[in-house]
Each structure stands twice: as structure tokens, then as C-alpha cells.
Image (cartoon, rainbow, N blue to C red; front, side):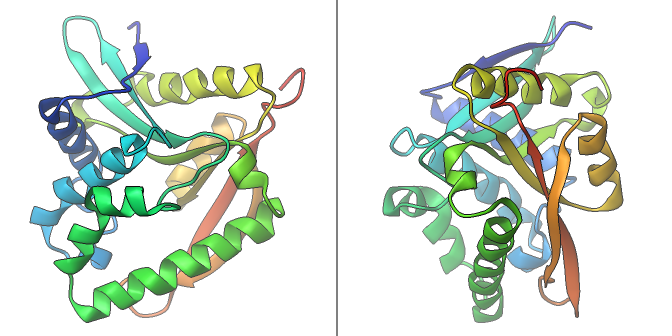
Length: 220
């Protein structure tokens, strides 16, 4: 089945609501669930904050994948060279801060710790400035009934072409053996991995994997 991918630079509120719902459904309303106090009612607003951060000042990009006679079934949020998620007040004020205000002090503290550990891991894995120099995937998802139809692959390949055109790498992170296998099958390379504090109420740590595809090269 043919997948059409397009960028949506100025989505309407209705489109943002739809895209947030698609992402929430893709993750079965459990995306960083512990970090949100396992409150499923926060899933769509939380993912909407990712979308609005991307378009707050044009610092990121929203891409959608469409199937014929169905419409939008997949969504990806990317940040191109020069920016990353939450690196400006405009992004944080576009929804993130509002979500954080609704969380318990324990959850807010976890996010502060996690984001710091996450930034350190990515910097160690790629080297200084590499993430900011490339195209970085923040979140991607396809509604469950249309998964395994090539939508996610098409969303990834769309950006790989953009990255290759301007000679920069394509970067992402993930957790879980299934996701690691998926990105390896798409020819991403593991640049590093490390243990990050698991969200409450879970004890211990979770392992995050840092990936890169060298789309900056003439052939990749």
C-alpha cells in the first residue's frame, strides 16, 4: 500500500488534536506513562505539547503519513539542525510547562533528572554538537490498525532524504529490544547506550540506545 508523507508547517488546532490522538493510540496511551503519574488523561495533551513545541517558532517539523482512502495514520516530530526539543522558552511555553504543573513533585523531579541524564548520554554517544548538527527524531507513531504497513519506514525515509540533501546525519534514541531491532533493520547504527533513571513508581534504571544513520555521506 502506497504511503504519502508530507510536512505540516501550520497545522490547525483540529489537526494537532488528531495528531496527538494518533500518537497516543500508537503508544497505547502509555508513552512515558510513569513520568505522567500513569494518568492516561494526560497522554494526548503531553504528546500535543511535543507537536506545539515543534511549531512554536519553526524550530521543529511535523510530518504525517497518509494511506489512500484512509488519511493520516502516522505522525513524526523532528528537529533539524540548530535546534532540539525543549531548547527554548518558546517550546516550553507551548504546552510543556502546563503539563509539568499538573504533575506531582516526584514526577517533576524525575523529569528534571531524566532530561539531564538523557542529554548527557546523547552527547557522550555522538560527541559534542553532533545532535544539534543533524536531524533528530523526537517522537514517531502509527495507529495500531495500520502498523506494519510501511508508514513508519516512510516517515523515516522522508527525513533521511532531507538530511542527505544538506549533508547531515539522522539521529534518534529508543528503549526496548523490539524498537532496537526495528531501527537496526532500517540500517541505523548504535552510537551508544546507557542506563537512565526509570520513571516513578518503578525502581532502578532503564537502558536507552542512541542511534545514528550517516546520511551526511555521499552514499549511506
